[in-house]
Length: 301
Image 1 (tube, one colour):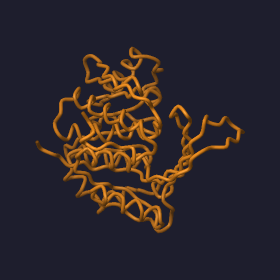
Image 2 (cartoon, rainbow, N blue to C red; image 1 turned 45 degrees about the horizontal axis):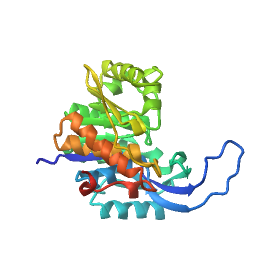
Image 3 (cartoon, rainbow, N blue to C red; image 1 turned 135 degrees about the horizontal axis):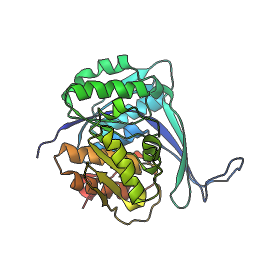
């Protein structure tokens, strides 16, 4: 089996999590239960997920010159992730996320991006060699949009496969969409990008077709516990997710994206790749936390 290199360009945060019986409404104070801190950030979560599932991963990002940043680097190295292009920002703190998780496993998250917001094109130039020797480039929206576009241009011109997880949800230009091999929005993100309300499989298919017609080669709309919709230009196919009892859905999408990158890097056909990613994400929601919830390859049956 050939293992291709995966470069994850994205965010690294420290998650501060409180488990509660229910999520608060505006103006409400709730006494929660357990509090704990975990390494997180969409980019970092996806890198760890990919590495645990067997990917050969490099992480390109920026942390603060603080305890959170130093800890992130150590944890990446423990996961056998290349940190040669994890930069340190002396002027801005590492990113943090405040996460509340209710008894059903649903969550609400507020992120202070810190140094993630200062990953600029000049930083990417320092990592250009790593991008060019990687086969798959995986990104998200917790770094500047201009940086995402800059990386996509470099990778596309070099014939690399660019995967974008468009979270948090933002409008995306047709120019950027045309540089993507694969986009992986959830229902909310697909609706914002396509302008088509996503309420069911039929409307999700219309949204996927819209993104495909604007230049993306492959569209996968993640549908939570229902699985994921795969669209490659002809018909859409719903790939169901294994049924599990969710404890914490915080990093499910990130695990899905790390897994899909690994599956594609190994040459799996797309339908099998989505099945693999759904299985990995389903395991992750049965555990509390972000990176710590990512499964290892031996757990995927």
